[in-house]
Length: 110
Image (cartoon, rainbow, N blue to C red; front, side, top):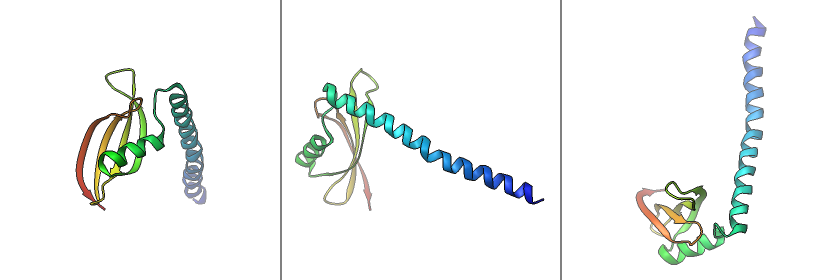
């Protein structure tokens, strides 16, 4: 009876301990890909992203992810930014030029 209870617990523990290692490996891949995009000129730096958003809409970047653009071979930054009034913006920025392609105000407040 005890072994029936212990096995699922051990399995769950093994999966839980193995999961973060896999997540870190994926993060490493994304970091390597982003670094290569920066070095090749396919993407501007995160500091440049922050500066452009601060100038454009006085926003503070909360999150930025680098992704392939769906309709072309370029890259885009998907960004969540905080406005001074507390609203969250979702933006898409051309990673090479820094041009803001889309901006959505979700009206969320924290």
